[in-house]
Image (cartoon, rainbow, N blue to C red; front, side, top):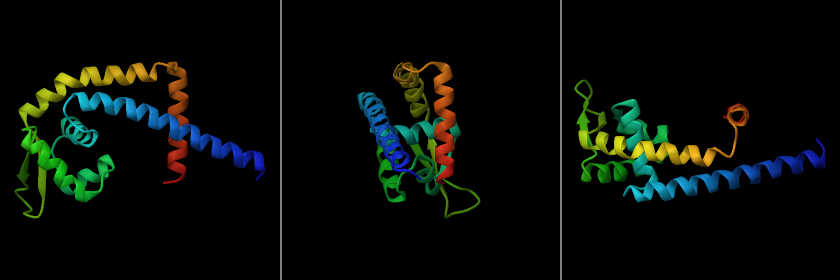
Length: 144
């Protein structure tokens, strides 16, 4: 492995990190205009698209420490966007369930949200997006 190969790997890491940060900060600003933080939005979006989720599994699905889930669920429950539902077959399991109000909220803001993400990503052509997706999947799977 040459010094040039190592430098190129480091450069890729830095460019990838900066691109992620720039895109993420831009999207997070939009999420804050909805009156939620990015984690609350991620939980609500998960419940909307995937249905009821056991509280113990939400953290792994949105990359959040399990201790923070209770706080986030409490906040969303206070806003009326979700409720906790006991599992009928296992008392140890509690599900988070999106409410009608939570569904309405996501349906109101999601079109604007996905349009903003599309605008950010529109710097790349569809072909470039496909290449980026394939390359980033390859990279991510290689270190899993």
